[in-house]
Length: 309
Image 1 (cartoon, rainbow, N blue to C red):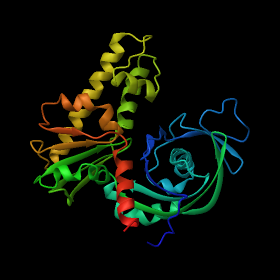
Image 2 (cartoon, one colour):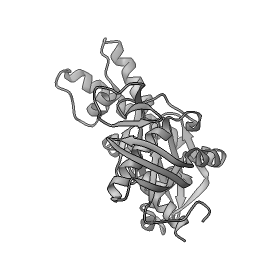
Image 3 (cartoon, helix red, strand yellow):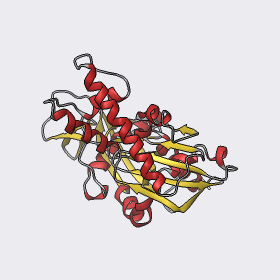
Image 4 (cartoon, helix red, strand yellow):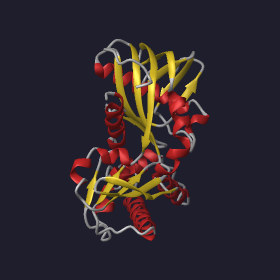
């Protein structure tokens, strides 16, 4: 191991820095964005203070960033997830952190070194939810998104000749095949049509009716948590758009030579949100759904395997 010495104040953390949501292996989840202020805001909910700036974490979503190393945004949100993990581990607020993070498979080879360096740091001081923390990220390892989620169920598929993995994220949908549990790198593809594009399409339709819903409200309607102030036609339209989105997505994946008679594993927050629409499609024969924390848990599994050898 070349990243640092593991001590009793060390934590291992898997971190999924999605364009829509940031999730951790320890169950932390928030929208990937924040409101920034030079003065203390009225509410201290999800408040992080870093370098004299106040950040209300997770109360909106930042613009899509294909290269998250271009700004501090992902790092700042990660501090909240790290503080949450330190608290849950019950260790001192001064901690050495070993991070497992991920990238879409098509960007993995090109960007992994840069993404690793982005997180490495020493003696970072910040306050989250009224508690002071000092952390050093001693090592960071980068893993392929989607395949990391699959690692959670690897033992169930290591003797299966062929399975599909579809990771529906915020901005991208990544998909590939695994053969006897091993990824076939020749079958790795990514489409720029994650659920953020679905939200945008629905919002455009709603604007024609002079209705402005947030992504969170649209997500609630898709999940069946319909707000009482809107008539049934709005919910019907949103559900129809979700069905169209899934059918179009599956059609595109089929064009890449995938066979849905093989088992299909659905990964990602988008996959969880649209689960019933995928399951009701006639195209897919056998589906296994993994929850929105599966990538983050997979990063932690791979990190511990690598660093505890």
